[in-house]
Length: 89
Image 1 (cartoon, rainbow, N blue to C red):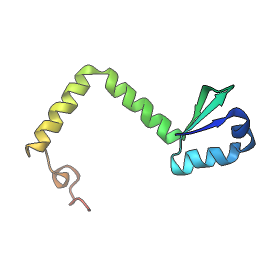
Image 2: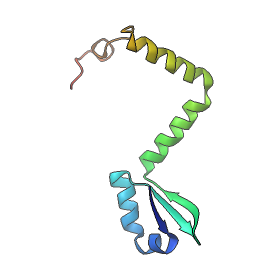
Image 3: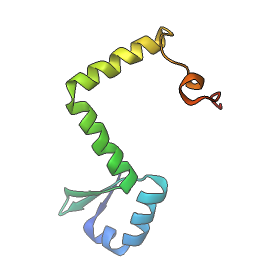
Image 4: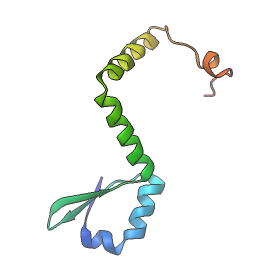
């Protein structure tokens, strides 16, 4: 995460927005030396919200861990069986 002052962010606003959107950079904006806001791309923000929702659901989290352990033991369903085509590498 890159940190910049509000003045710096203001003078480079479009550049900051493009970097956040195009390359996934995250910017912490400070005001008088205090972290004040964060600028990040919309896709990253939505992914963060989705992750938080998953983490809030304890049953889903337990199920996810269980399925992960099963997959490591080879008990999962193959990509080809689910999607009808071999997985590309």
